[in-house]
Amino acid sequence: MKIYQLSTLLFALILLLATCSENGQSNEQLTNKHEYLEKGKTIASATFATLSGKLQEAMQEGGVQNAVSYCNLAANPLVDSLAKIYNADIRRTALLTRNQANNPTARELRQFEIYRSTHKAGKTMNPVVHSIDPNTVAFYAPIQLMPLCEKCHGKVGESISSEDYEHIKKLYPQDEAINFATGDLRGMWSISFQK
Ligand code: HEC
Picture 1 (tube, rainbow, N blue to C red):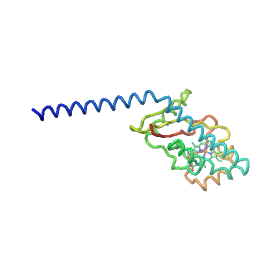
Picture 2 (picture 1 turned 90 degrees about the vertical axis):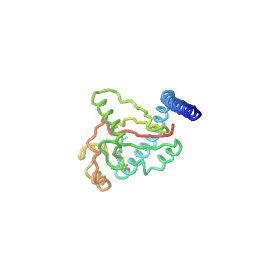
Picture 3 (picture 1 turned 60 degrees about the vertical axis):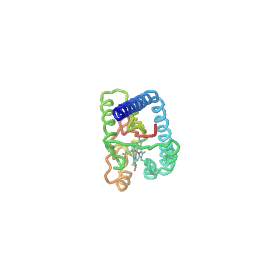
Picture 4 (picture 1 turned 135 degrees about the vertical axis):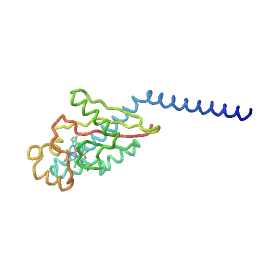
């Protein structure tokens, strides 16, 4: 009798805990979605401002070859400090990459494909947030090509000079990130942080 009562109590307790955590999680996702989106947008635009500022400065000072290293997030100490401030993992990925280290994970690829078909249909690609585990949120946003980017991601012999491309190819022999035009879907932000 006692054992029966105890196991009923345990069962009820487990059920209660399971329901609590389930509700807690889904409520949190709903109520904080806007906040997570805003946080992701803030990190992406701060990172972009940091990168493109440096990129333009270096291009003005010494042309494309001088600026090539400034499109590398991982090698940028300012991006690193942004990641520390926001306690976030900041990545950019693409289907066609220059650096293979930026190739998409299966999860990123799923989102990128959604952006690709949205863009193809001529619709607006909006930033999104997904809960990827109980403690982590992933923020994704599209990256479209701007005129400035064509100097390194456009057509060789047209927007990219052959000499500049030779330099890029030496550093990135497996480069696939060319032939893009302004407005094209170039890549995607993939930023994850704690809930
Ligand atoms: C001076 C040359 C240069 C310019 C200008 C440039 N990039 Fe890049 N881009 C690179 C290089 C080099 C890499 C590889 C960085 C690395 O090692 O992670 C890269 C990588 C990327 C990646 C990551 C995916 C990949 O291909 O590895 C994205 C996304 C990207 N660039 C978008 C842009 C956009 C958008 C612009 C314009 C705002 C731009 N780039 C301007 C040289 C350039």
